[in-house]
Image 1: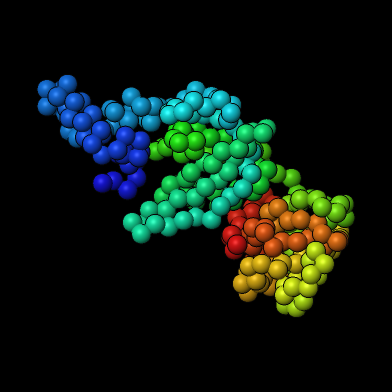
Image 2: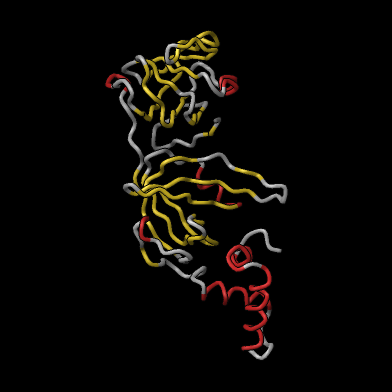
Length: 256
């Protein structure tokens, strides 16, 4: 069984028995003068798997079972990658368009496409297919960022605001007790500067992330929450770069 490529996509869609029947029928139609590999590619092409750009749909209008879908949407959430006992891996990117939200599943080598995605990034997807209410990026499919989510100014934050922040760690306050929703919890905090202003960032979950942080690191906070003047990053993704460079040269390592 193939781990990736058109055969894996067809197995996922049709199942083993139905695929084998289609392969046998395709080989018979060419009087036996057709290899299994070529038969699979022909079937995949007929299903829309190997074409160029497919039909463009609004997210809410994608028909059940549709292949080779092109769409635009914004990123709502990026879930951690999942590794299966078989060695395969997947990652879900929740995408949204208006009130419609759907999971976009990335498989195997495509899992890395989600590495730099941020909530509210606008993306273009080509070569996806619909299955059971989910979207899957097909073999040879494309995912591209067409508009980046903007970064918030540390000097202009409002209580309860969800923010994307990029800055340098100016001080690490370390672990201790923090007050959250009237409760005293064990947490970790550091000060973040964007060159104009400074804010405290604090977390009460995922404290293991603190081990990666050092003064002078450049940190990108994906979807923090302004709470009592500080930025709560307990549920945020953090991306870290050790050597600051201009924003146009921003390869980031995800640490949480």
